Length: 147
Image 1: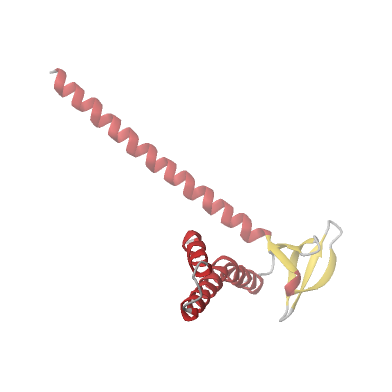
Image 2 (image 1 turned 180 degrees about the vertical axis):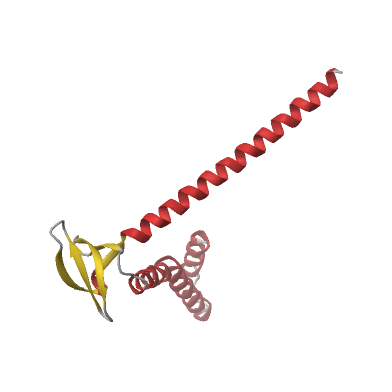
């Protein structure tokens, strides 16, 4: 894709100046392609990340362990519209923080990690059972051939 953009740029700069409309449309096309590439490589992933963070902050529940942007680790005690009260440390200090200050929900991250590991284990078990079944079929076929 980038090669075609470079080729268009070279062909546009190599014209003798007889047709300026061709080179101007080439530049417009190149700019549109460049904006499209920037959108799909930079803007769209950033919006997706922001949406996931917003959903994570809205789905906080009492009892979730969180880490704030400042690095404070605590457990959610009370949830209000725009702020949370968290309990930190063994001496149970309570702090009031804004929702936007939550960086990670450790509880949900651990659950997600366990689900991923369980899925991997299930896939390995399924693959192992298929390979054992295939090995058994090969052994059965060799026994038939020997008889």
